[in-house]
Image 1 (tube, helix red, strand yellow):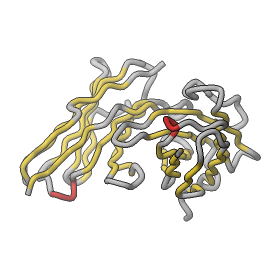
Image 2: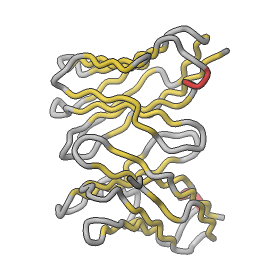
Image 3: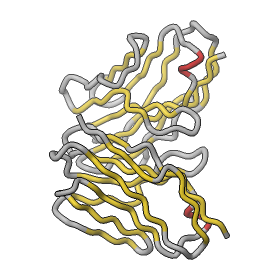
Length: 111
Length: 111
């Protein structure tokens, strides 16, 4: 089955700097890679996703890249703000099977 | 439209008692997932329902845990003879196609 690893487990950046979180997956059949943000005490919220037919997707300050050959994908947050502080989860799967989550990255943005 | 809902939002039970947790998915979503999240931890997959197919129970931690989905809609997760290590937030998510949406969770405390 699918196995997703995520690094780093914790990340601290200064406000305005960029943050990068990296994930690897094991199942070459996976074609869908979402990222979720979970603020303290709240449910995970989908912030961006990428499908295997593209290598990069951007939404304002957030971008994701995908390298299917190497089986890794990354989340990039530019111009970080204190409200970006949260736990971020990557995931991998398909539209017809379960999605497996990485262990999470706790991001702290220092004002 | 309405999102995924879960009830109760909080449940305190004594060790050894049975509990039932309910999930109402987004109308029309064919896939439904249950996850467990212990304090400060990641999203542990428990069980997955997809349409009329047999559920994927590969994540259930013991035979004390079971789940059903009636009429392809509402799902109930049952934990029998609860133990203190069952204390966690239980999250339900539903999905149609690629995107998966989480409910607010049920916080279970076993005393």
